[in-house]
Image (cartoon, rainbow, N blue to C red; front, side, top):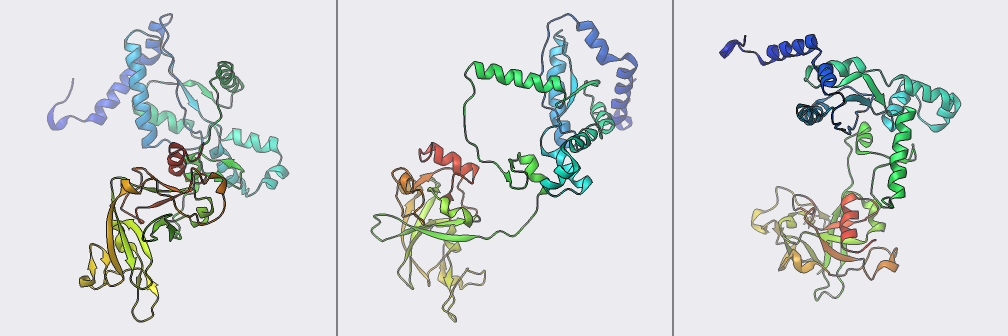
Length: 366
C-alpha cells in the first residue's frame, strides 16, 4: 500500500524498497538470472580509500548505477564490484599526519616497508561508512567482492593495458602544466593540491610592455598576481571582443593601453605627495569619465581588441630571445575577462594551464 497526500514520505518509501531488495537479495538474484548472457563491462573510477563519501561521490555513483541498471534491464550480465583507489598522495598524506612525518628522511628512518604497511592498513578504514551510504542511495554494487588498486593483479592489468597501447603506437609524449610539490618531488592532481588549500594574500603588480612600432610609443599594461613568472613571459593575451583604450599620462607623457572597462585600475597621482596611488572610491566624480581619471590621463583612442592581435612588444628580460620570431606578441582568447586586472594577461606557458594552452594554439611553443 502506498500512502498519498501529506501522509506520503519519500524517505520512508525508500526504506521499504531497500528492505524489499534485501529480503529478495534482488541484486544477486539479477546477477544469477543473467549469468551466462552477454557481458556488459563497466569501467569505474574508484574513490580514494582515505575519505568519507560526499555529494560528488553520490552524484557520480547515481549516474553509474543508472547506466549499469539500464544494461541489466536489457538482459546483459553486469558485474559491479566496488573499488578503492589506494594510489597517490592522499594515503601518504593521512599517514604523515598520523605519524607526524614532515620530511623524506623520517620515512627512511622508519623504513619504507613499515611505512608502506602502515599505508595499507588504513585502506579499509571507512568501508562500513561507504557501504552504508552507497546502499542507502539505492545503488546496486558488490562490496564483498571489492577490489583495491594496490592488488597485484589489478596493477598488472593496468601495465598490460599500457603495454597494449604502446604496441599499437598510441602512446605519445606531451606536456601539461600541473601543481607540483617540492617536498614530495612529484606532480599533484587538483584533488591533492587542494588537500592543504589556504587563503593567503597575493601580490599583484601592473607591468608595462612597450609596443614595437607604435606611433605614440604606447605600452600594453598587464596585471598579474604571479610576478615571479615574469622572466618566463612569452606572450600577452587580450580578448578580441573587448574594447581597449589608449591613454596618455599627463604627468610624464607615457602612453598606456588597457581594456576600456578597466581604466579605473590605472594608478593616479596624489596631489599632495606627487606619488602615484590606486584610485579610491572617493575620487572627484567630475574628474572621472568612464572610469578614467581625466586629471591624470588623456584618452587618445579606443581600439578593438582584435586589432591588437599580432602586435610585437619588447620583453622585460632577455631570456628566450631565441624564440623572438614567434614569441613576444599579442594573442587573443576568451579566457581573458574584464572583471579584474587590465584586460591584458601576461602569459608564461610553463606556469599556467591557460597560458600553455593559448601559447601552444598560437604556435609560440611546440
